[in-house]
Length: 237
Length: 146
Image 1: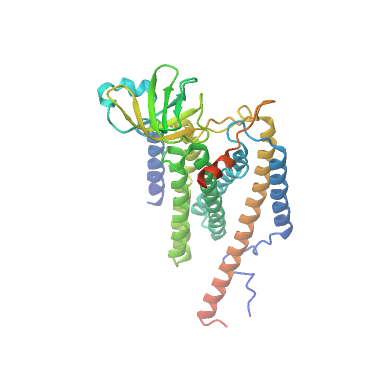
Image 2: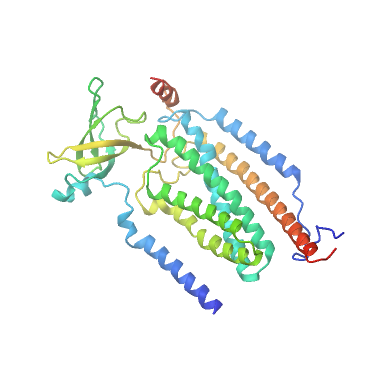
């Protein structure tokens, strides 16, 4: 019986993600959340509603980072046709879509009391929703295409072009007049809030790295099993 | 063949990018007009649905709790426009705050609002000593239970 960890398509064996990275990442989230909620005062205008910022803003940053990974590995796949690049891009897209959805949900929960409306079709909100739909479409496309080479090619094209929307989302509040506020900077943020925001960003970055690595590991194992099943069906052993 | 496909794709992306940054969208994806821009439209800006945005002129707010009649002036620092709205404003509505109102400018020069939104700035400030932070979530809960 062949060993499924030594699949033919890839020379390197699937990576093993240390469970400790997961522990450290989630401990960091608990620490950063506790620290920022306990230490930061209520905002002058919106009171404790400000606390949503500690997840909404870093989640948006992680969305951008995840889709940057999708862009880089999709381009690399188109260039080198290495299947592992495709699997890594898909893993980052899945994790990015989760952070993107989280950003949208928390933004709506904040918008209802702060703006008076759950949703408006301004440039920032619309472009963020479009980004979400592109990557949900990317994942749907992957589920529909059976041939792994076709799937990798098409999704690399969608992933690379779709990630072009990331700078548009980021710059939307500068290019166009929106209801959403422009980016905060240390100048517009009281020091009491800055450290908490940075700690949460580091914690969510660890979560992002852990999730993408773990998802990639699973994707590699799935591929190895597929290859094995195919070889068995061909009348191997 | 393959190379030309990539070049064509890249050219399309660059063109879309350029159009987004410098082209038509710059004018069309404006979420609201300032009082100056709306007044500059003259008769064309009257009785058409638009969004008007600006700052609530300090001292201009008049609120009648019995008739739920809310009047204030929206200013962009150059021009200003009186607004008439009905219903309780969002919790964060106050003098000096940024607002976006949906509605129509009347022939009398008063903007009839159908929807009022508060535009928060990118500033997050702790209250100064002696100042009370707004406990918004509490007022929200009491409002929604009524």
